[in-house]
Length: 201
Image (cartoon, rainbow, N blue to C red; front, side, top):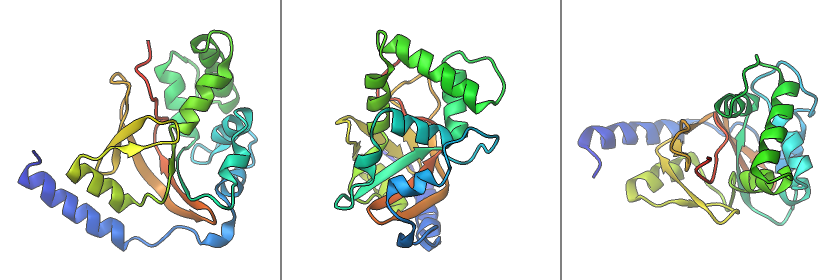
C-alpha cells in the first residue's frame, strides 16, 4: 500500500513529466538510426551509446530495432551504465570504454559457458518493450503494480521513474535525460544502469 506522501510525490512527478516536451522529433529515423548517431567509436563521452551500439551490432539486433513496421520502446543504457555494470562485475580500471567493453565481453563469455552472444542478446532484449511506453506509463504501472513485459519475455517492475532490477544485489536503474526520444518506429528512454533479467551468481 502506497503512503499518502508517496502518492503526493508521484502526482507531482507525473505532472512534471507530462509537462516536459519530447526530446527529439520523429524525423531522426528509427531506433537503430538514433543509436547509430553515437558513432560506435569508444571515446570519453559517458552519456552517449557507444557501448550499447557495439552490443546491439554484436548481438545482431540492429535490423530488429530498425524495423519500420514495429513500435518499440528501448530503455537505452548509456556508456556510464555499462561502466557501472562492469564495476559491479569486478572491473577495477578507470573509465575507458574499450577496456569496459573488453571486460564485459569476457564476463558474458564466462556466464554463457564460452559464448557471450546468448547472454548479451537476452540482456539487450530485456531493454526492449513492444509498444509505446511513456514516462507517465511507468508511474501508472507503479500505482497499479503492473510489471512491464519485455521482448525477452521477462518483466521488470517500475517504481515511478526507477526500474527495479531482477538482481537484488545491483542498484536500480533510473530513467534519465535524454528521455522520450521519438523515433519513427518507437521511443527511447536513457537509463542509468544496465538491466539484468536474472539474479547473477
